[in-house]
Image (tube, rainbow, N blue to C red; front, side, top):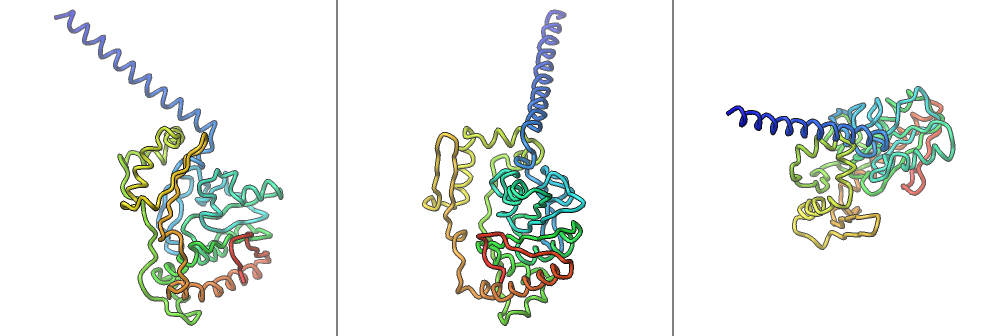
Length: 294
């Protein structure tokens, strides 16, 4: 009996040692990943509701700064503030490759990135009035994007009572259902993966390697709802990219009365931005290639 107990204790001891070694290895890998890689390029931040913006990133989550934007820190002042949506945020690009960061490298001085996906001209105006002015910039650059900014104007004016006053401008009726872009369906082990994606740089790095691409391919196929012709896969030695050509992503239907209403309202929003800039002695500029402010 004593021999059996001793053998069992040896097995348990080895299992405990294996478990401790595994945990230590994972923690060491995570620490190394955070030293080598910028967490903001890998971790998913926490999105929270906001009554004027609809949503924002919670500060200090996913490697973001105090205000929830994609900067190493929130400075006391900035020479230039860049406001925009995912194009300004730098979606799918590393933080240092976003156009505000590149502008800072070229020009010098402090350039603050105040972009976030899902934002549009009304959010740009609100950010300019409430946060950008606190940095006392000489210049504010707005990255207006024709791809979906009119969607954002319409949705905010139509469904957020804080901006309903804009519905009376432009001579077009703001009525109808919301613009809803396709959302990804549930993921395999979704809750666990979501937690890891917010807390582990090592997991995010490993999951983006090509060896795990089959999981992402399956999920994209599910999101396409059987319309495989909408998906194009490109692969080479360094890249594996899946393009989704779903028509709901591609077209800005100028015949849609909701788009017409948003296009009539947007110039009024831009004029309000110009008024804020004049009051605060800031220059208001537009990022090249993103549409016209006037």
